[in-house]
Length: 301
Image 1: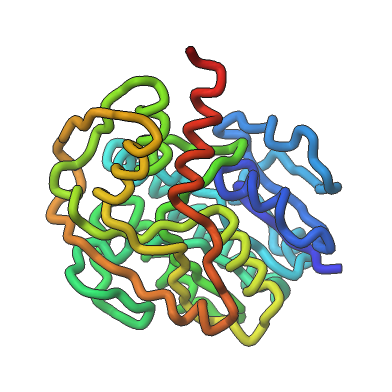
Image 2: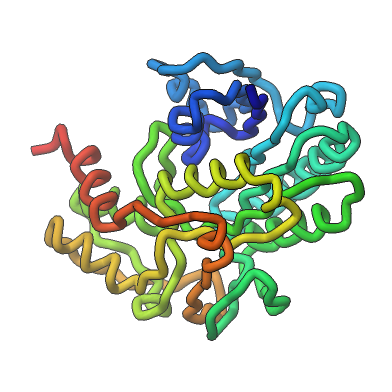
C-alpha cells in the first residue's frame, strides 16, 4: 500500500482530494488549521492519519516513510498577496523550500508540487510547459515559480510540477476568492459580479476538482512521469463565457472594477503533455457553477 503525505489537506483542493483519492492509498494529512477547516474530516469514508502541525516543521526522518508528498499547503489568494507579501513569502517560499530540502534529504518520496498557470502572467500566445517566457504578475505567482526553480535545482529529488488552472468546484474547504467561486457567491446572494474590466474578453485556464484529483492519480501511478512540468486544466474559457453561465442560472448585474494585477493579457494554455499520460478532462464548468449556486442559495428565499 502506498503511503501518501498531503500537506494543506483540509483546503479547497485537499478536502476534495482526501475523499476521492484511490482508497488503496494510506493517507496522512498535515494541516496547521490556519483556516479552521477541521470539519473537512467529518464523515470521512476512509481512515486517515491527521497531524495538526505546520509542514515547515516536518523532519526528513518523518518524511522518509512516505512514497509521495503532495504539497498543497500554501497561501493562495493571488490578489490579496499584494497586501500580505511578508506572510506569503515565509509560507510559500521559505517554509516550502525547507520542505523540498527535507524531502530530498529523506531520499524517499516523490514530491508533487501543484504550481499554477498564473506563472505565465503577461502572455499573448499559447503557453507550453517548456516555454521560458514565464512572467508572473503577483507575489503569489512569483512564489510558485520560485519553488519550481528550487525544485529543479535540488539534488536527489524526484518531483512533478503540476501547473493547475484556476480551481472550480464545490468542497468543504471551498474558497471564495477565486474567480468562479466568487461569482457564484456574489450571484447567489444578490450581489453584482465584480469583474476586472481588463479581463472580460480574455482567456484563462480553469481546472475542476475532479480533474485535479485525476491528474494527481495519474502521476502517482506512473513513475515515468517524474521530473517533469505539466499544465493541468479542464479547459480554457473566456471570462465572458463564465459570466454567461452565471447569468443563465440567475439574472445578475455586473460591476466593473480595476485590477491590482497590472498589464495582464489573454493567455491560452496547452495541456497536451498531461493528456499524453492518459488525462481526459471530465468536469463541466457549467454544471459546477450550477451545483455551487444551488448549494449557496439552497436555504434562501
